[in-house]
Image 1: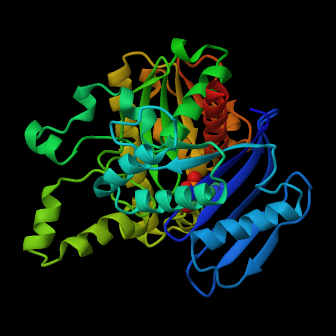
Image 2 (image 1 turned 60 degrees about the horizontal axis):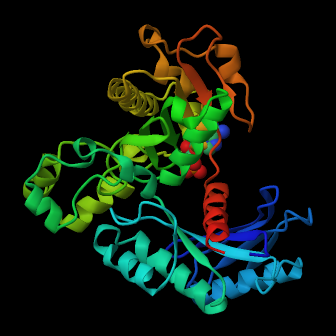
Amino acid sequence: MTGTRVLVLNSGSSSLKYQLLDMRDSSRLAAGLVERIGEQTCRLKHTPLAAGGDAREADGPIADHDAALKAVAQELARDGLGLDSPDLAAIGHRVVHGGMFFTEPTVIDDAVIAEIERLIPVAPLHNPANLTGIRTARALRPDLPQVAVFDTAFHTTMPESAARYAIDPRIADRHRIRRYGFHGTSHAYVSRATAELLGKAPEDVNVIVLHLGNGASASAVRGGRCVDTSMGLTPLEGLVMGTRSGDMDPAVIFHLARVGGMSMDEIDTLLNKRSGLFGLCGDNDMREIRRRIDEGDEAAALAFDIYVHRLKKYIGAYYAVLGTVDAVAFTAGVGENAAPVREAAVAGLEGLGLAVDPGRNAVRGDRPRIVSPDAARVAVAVVPTDEELEIATQTYALVGKNT
Ligand code: AMP
């Protein structure tokens, strides 16, 4: 392998996010996003980080992912970072669902594509979009190694007791129903970075990771291996999220269908897109919710309390799963920025050795940091996640091993 650059692609149904990294020092050379692919109002935003220039934005129709990637390649070429460069070592793709089969990052070939396709029934929104990105990139650079990094892979170490639902295993297996978990690249990165922050090896620490973004999930990580996580068959289970309900009595669905007269599609949309913080108070941005609370808004205050109550339940549950806990790590948009969420989530848990120091918790920053008092038995940490760097690192390591 001669190149040292890795292009990370995160292909959504109508979007394409990318970052180009130099793995000699993990620096970012360029980053960008193509939005609303297929629409007249498509927008490409490209930031030439290495050149230090301003972001460039272009509006106009981009018909499909193929055209989007070609437009990205053109932007990169303008900065002297073209995809035809021998410096490019590999392309790393974020793939949401790898089922039970993909436990590690995997070099993509036709068999891998076929398996990702077979998983479409359990990831109908995400895997087709990820596959489009893979096919497009392969067509553009057929000679280049392409690696799939799966959101589910980190969670494949969960024991059966955590991964199985309490339903007939024959029915579960026939339909591939089990708890897969998501945000795995983030949980892997943050649990490792937390160990580093504590000055220990990942094998020597137990960490509860709270990834609180618009989507949100918790995981219990024992000695570097995930032993439980809050998302399940789909990213709907678990914590209260921006627009998703998280945990609920499954009978709510029967009730909405039988008594409420709603169709399955309507219920799906309700629980995934119109619930969570948004469903409770009409806003899914924690900044806006805090602003409304400061103005005395009761709906926003109740939404916040429900959010924090669920979070606290998961901290307690994963404390019990792990037995001993070295650190609770907050990450992603809410976890990294919302000091009141961190404070409320551990309030009253002094008996478990958990507390935040108000002064430390209030300090903002983009570096990993401890926000608990020095004397606390369990460290409460803020650890910014970096999924692109994790995908690039895993991709580069795998390609290096194979050449
Ligand atoms: P993510 O999915 O990780 O990008 O997180 C997005 C969410 O983070 C937003 O919807 C906000 O709720 C939250 N967020 C971002 N910045 C802040 C901030 N400064 N304070 C509170 N919440 C924030």
